[in-house]
Image (cartoon, rainbow, N blue to C red; front, top):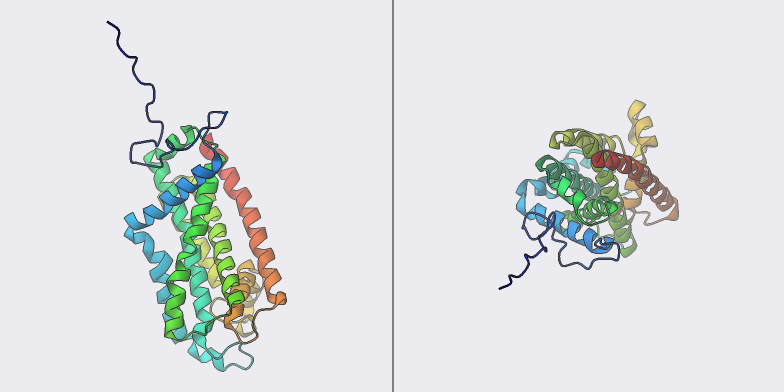
Length: 287
C-alpha cells in the first residue's frame, strides 16, 4: 500500500495566514518570483485597509487639516484686506493648504505602517518572500500617493461648502498633482527615517520635519507679508513653490505657467533626492 507524498505547497511568508499580503494567487515568473506589478498593488491595498483598522490614522489625514483650515481662516481673515492679496476669500487661500497638509500626513502614514511591520518582525518575512525587494519600497510609495488623495474627497468639498471659490478644472488638476507629489515626498522621507531607526518612535522626527517644512513656507501668509528670517526661510523652501502651484485655481489671477513650472521642478527634485534617501536606508534593512 502506497501513501501520497505530503504536499510541499506550504504558504510562504505572508501567504494564506491572513496576517499580511497574500501573493499566492499571483503568477510566478521564470525566475521563481512574483511580478512586481501585482506585488505593488497588493501592498497599496494592504496600506489602505490598515487605515480602516486603525482609526487613529484618520486624524492626521482628515481631521487635523480640517481643524487648521477652520482655525487659520478665522485667525488670518484680516489679511485679505492687504493691498495686492491674491484673493478676497480667506477660505480660498487656506483650503488648498489644508489639502496639501493632509496629503503630507497621508504620506507619513506609510512610515507608521512600515515601522510597525519592522517591529513585529513581519517585514523580515516580506524580505524572504519570492518577490523583487524593490517592490516593497515602490508599494509603500504607491500607498503614500494614494493616501494623499483622501483630503481631496473630504477637506476640499467641506471647504467649498463653507464658501471657498470653486476652482477651474486645470486648477483642480494642479492641486491634485501637488497632493500626489507631496504624498510621495513625505512618504519617502518617512521611509528613509524608519529604515534607519526601525522604530515607530522615529515617526516623531518625521512629523517635526513635515511641520517645519509646511509652517516655514507661505502656508499661512504670502511671502510679501513676511519679514526677517521667516521671509528668508520661506523664500528658499521648495514647499513654497508647491503651494503656489496648488493654489492657482483658487486665486484671482488663475493658472499661469510662471507659477506652475517652479512647483513641478521643486516636486521632482524633492522626490529624486528623497528617493536616494529612502533607497540607501532600505539597504540597511536588508543587511
